[in-house]
Image (cartoon, rainbow, N blue to C red):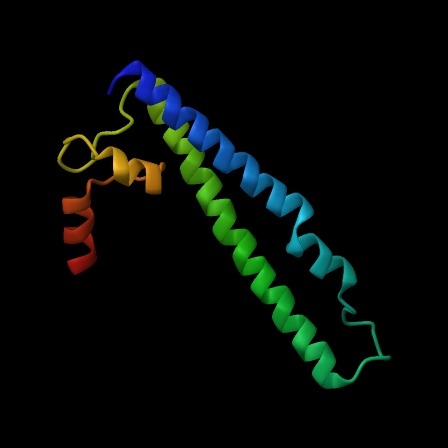
Length: 119
């Protein structure tokens, strides 16, 4: 991959990382945990406590998913650094620019991804 392309994808990855960090630190997760009544609350109806608990669980699941994406983005930055970025880890073919723009942390070309999903 050309150096100019690597710089484009590095910038794209860093922007996505920053957006996720911002969402994790300033977003819904922090607010939902802070505002939740918790186990010691007795002023709320049982159904309200259950709804709050459900919302907290969803927030934790989103945070976990975003944490996984952060790890994938960090891995993609490492691949840029070591020169393996943009090549499929299975067949070593170059991954299309469109695919990398859509999922900049992908490790698989579209053909290998389709084979993986069919298995």
